[in-house]
Amino acid sequence: MLILLLAYLGGMLTIASPCILPVLPFVFARADQPFLRNGLPLLAGMALTFALVASLAAVGGGWVVEANQYGRWLALALMALFGLALLVPQLAERLTHPLVSVGARLSEAAQTDSRPRPGASFLLGIATGLLWAPCAGPILGLVLTGAALQGASIGSTLLLLAYAAGAATSLALALVIGGKVFTAMKRSLGIGEWVRRGLGVVMLAGVAAIALGLDTGVLAQVSTASLGGVEQALVDRVIKPQSGSAMMSTVSEATPTLPDEGEAPSLDGAVQWLNSKPLTAANLRGKVVLVDFWTYSCINCLRTLPYVKAWADKYRDQGLVVIGVHAPEFAFERDPGNVAKAVSQLGIDYPVALDNDYAIWRGFNNQYWPAHYFIDAKGHIRHHHFGEGEYAESEQVIQTLLREAGAQKLTTGLTDVQGQGVQQASESDGPRSPETYLGYARAERFTSGQAMHDAAKAYAAPVKPSLDDWGLAGSWIIGAERATLSGASGRIVYRFHARDLHLVLGPGADGKPVHFRVTLDGQAPGDAHGTDVAPDGSGIVTEQRLYQLVRQPGEVIDRSFSVEFLDPGVTAYAFTFG
Image 1 (spheres, one colour):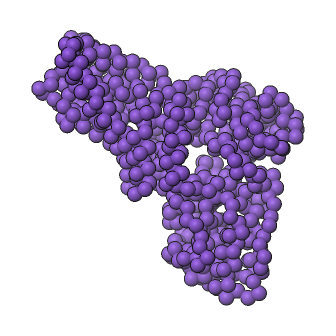
Image 2 (cartoon, helix red, strand yellow; image 1 turned 60 degrees about the vertical axis):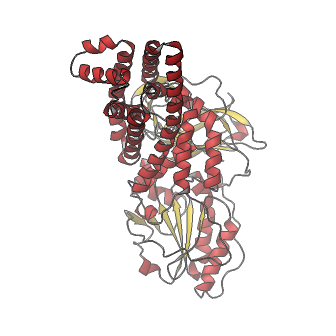
């Protein structure tokens, strides 16, 4: 219920977002009509359409996004027709069939108070829902990402519907207030005809704004800056994640008594196992089990890995079984060969289940990378922890469960390990730049103009980006989860605040290495170079993984980062910081 309320409040906040401005004229065009027979059907059509399209896009793949693009253009045509009908009613009669019938009915419904048409309003609501591109703030981001990971479910649709209902509520209030204002204007000034024509002009301006991409470009960036803090405050009150990739869940604190959290779900559903034959509850009965949900390009997962490996080695002979459940975030992490290579390079020798279909993830109702579940010898979950940190507490839980299981001569003391390279923990808990995706499905604060989906386009990098803004230079193809360099060379720039900067990269489709050069504030990084970069800024992309490009010594300050790729074909997925 708390998450549903959070989604509803997030939807209500959209009324204050500049990116909702192009949609408001379509709503206010019905403001002079009875609310129950005109405004309510319009808002219902808008909310239902948004929830349906967003649900399908979250779980259905790229074809839904592509189909919705055609739907948006059809909706734009309908809205333009309605705007022209308001502006010049005589023009509706001259339009060719079948549009003339729709236009005439919409015009009639817009002008005739005595004969309101709920069906026409509902149709306009459907079109508005197709055009509605809410700013992807923290709340909507949690909802959409959770829907994508959990798969198609009633819960995901309810969350999206709650978000849409919140937006419809705030728009309904605006509609009621607007109706009273327009009625007063017509009564006092007798300018009803001019008000109607003015709405037609504003509607056409809204159509033009959406057609030019202002709703998802400039206005969306302004909205993210203006409302992101408010939404994040709501998220922090309801969801209290520790460092890591948190998605729609609450964090439970461990207690010394280690309460029984229920029987552990099955480990069935893995597409493949590494370092072991498939494990079952029967295999594990009598053992203490640590289930670690991770993915090999996740920086938070990599930072917890030294502790997980150390616990596996330290307590293996005393009855502990560590199982890594690899749940991929990006498409290349679904390749068993890529995962097997990463497991070998990272020195992981305990069993790893490849959970490409998220069957185990959903069984545990998990929402985080990384996530640790501690299971006793009877097969019951006794503790869990999300994100980095609290390693001493986690190891004490392991020791407690081993004692309960009857372990003899239990090794005491706590493990103190220091990660190296990208596995080294951050030295500061202060503010840092957020994880940033380059694919259009989850991209934010992109400042190189309107992104073109799944097609090559030449972009220009921002000259002076603000903090946490990023952009592209050169010819790139921006896909749902990655950006691919289609020109001979190109750059990515980012204004960031953090000790470390990482970028998930991969070579081209042909597998050829891609050379690159990194600069900080226009200079070679020197002693601020990352483990995958030389002091002069040079480096090579040879495989699909997370690359550490910057590690700053000393004080952490705002820096301007640039990486120039000297060969075509590189794919870039996401920035992470530490």
